[in-house]
Amino acid sequence: MVVLNKIYTRAGDGGRTRLSTGEPRLKSDLRVEAYGTVDEANACIGLARRHAAAAAPAIDAMLGRIQNDLFDLGADLATPETGRALSWEPLRVTQAQVDRLEREIDELNAALQPLNSFILPGGSPTAAALHLARTVSRRAERAMVALAATEGEIVGAAALKYINRVSDFLFVAARAVNDNGAGDVLWVPGQNR
Image (tube, helix red, strand yellow):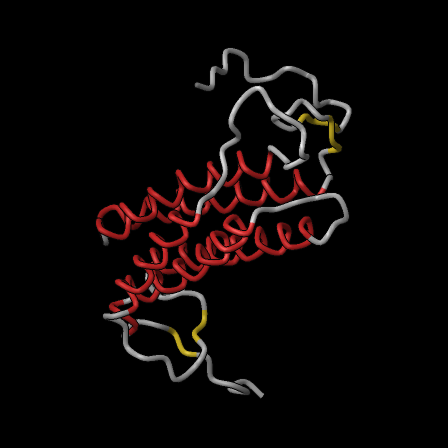
C-alpha cells in the first residue's frame, strides 16, 4: 500500500527524482517524461468522466477501469527492467488488460456509423474531452516508443500495446457519445481555401 504523509519533500527541487527502484533520474529523463505523460492522459480522462458520468454511464465505467490501468502503467514505467532482483514483485501491464480493452473497443465500435471521412475533435462536451484525452494518450505513446528505442531502456510489449489501445478506445468512445457517430464533426479537405 502507498502511504503519503507529506506531499512535498523538497527532494526534487534540484530537477531530479527517483524511480520506484530508488534510482535517481533527471525530471527531463525519457522514462520520467513517459510516465508523466501517462499521468497527464489519466487526468484528461478524469475530466472527460465529469461529462461521461451522466451522459454515458457504461463508458464512464470503462474509463474508470482505464484510469486504474494507467496507474498500473505508470508503476510499470517507473520500475525499469534491469535484470537485477528487487525485494518486491514489480507491477507490470499484462496482455489481459490489453485484451479487455480490445473487447470494449469492439463493443462500442459495433454500434457506430462507418467513417467515410476523418473527423474533427469535437461534437458534444464529452466527445471533445475524450478527444483531448486521446491526443495526450498518443503523446504518451510517442514518449514510450522513444524510451523503448533508447539503448539500455526496456518497455514491456504489453505496456506499449496498452497505451496504443487506450487512444483507440478514446477515439471510439468519443464517437459513441457523439450519438454513435451521427454527431461527429467531419473534416472537409480544403474547405477554407
